[in-house]
Image (cartoon, rainbow, N blue to C red; front, side, top):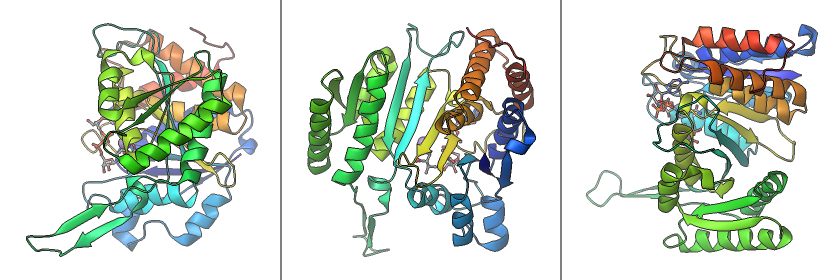
Length: 349
Ligand code: NAD
Ligand code: IPM
Ligand code: MN
């Protein structure tokens, strides 16, 4: 397995170190693993002005997958690293399916008063919407300055992400897809998304479908998250609702994601949903579980199903037995997970 690792900024390197410890335990022979580190992020930008050189994109394409910690740093103007590095990677590598599972693991006390089973996956479009950079500024620095950010929605882009959501729903026990959008206001994009979902629904008669406006979806995510199975939505709505989904399933420290090119023409990239968390960086306080679970998504994507299941089972065991009032430091959690995966027993809960 040729793996590219981008530790990034803030807590990124801290959580990635722990995930690599876990990886070393699930990989039978070190010779099976070819890891290249890429020092992209704030430090490189400060010292060289580089964000993501073309040559690096070319090298990344030669890998089977990418593991990323997080990017973003208070010393760099907001958006420089996020757009110039993270979003550029997602666009260049055509990561159209941003897969974000949210599961409430046994033993985890979410913030909600009534606790029911939560096992959902958000299929967030990853290359379009308001993220496409389609906008600009007119009459800059005047009283009448105008800023636009036009959301890009193509039939091609929506069809491929909706197809992925239905294919996933088809494999899941509840076989249910919820489209989240804002069709009451976003007339044109709303109409296109609705029509594409309707067409997909006709091809999948055994998958049930419903629709929620994104504002109402945030209510249901907090009051009744167990109603969700597969959610399909655009790039921006998906960003927002996956932080809520993370919060109701035990916090952002547990939320994993994969940026997938489902055609496999480009390597997919796996990263925790959270950012570089400058408020806790350098303290060894970040929970590396989200990154470890992202590694498990990575292994699953590459067909290493058994290794992926072992990691998930180890995380489930750790979460079921952890003292959640003091979960331990980054390194202690990483050590526990590495020890669990290295034992031959499968730690099912
Ligand atoms: P954040 O996710 O970094 O932090 C939000 C809150 O969650 C903070 O209080 C933080 O301490 C906490 N948190 C995050 N990860 C945690 C973990 N593993 N364990 C325990 N607590 C954790 O979001 P933010 O503060 O809005 O953004 C910080 C920077 O990260 C910004 O520059 C932002 O653009 C960037 N960002 C990057 C990514 C990415 O690289 N994928 C994602 C989100 C934000
Ligand atoms: C995420 C992040 C990114 C996004 C930012 C940092 C560009 O919030 O991965 O959820 O909005 O997609
Ligand atoms: Mn986000």
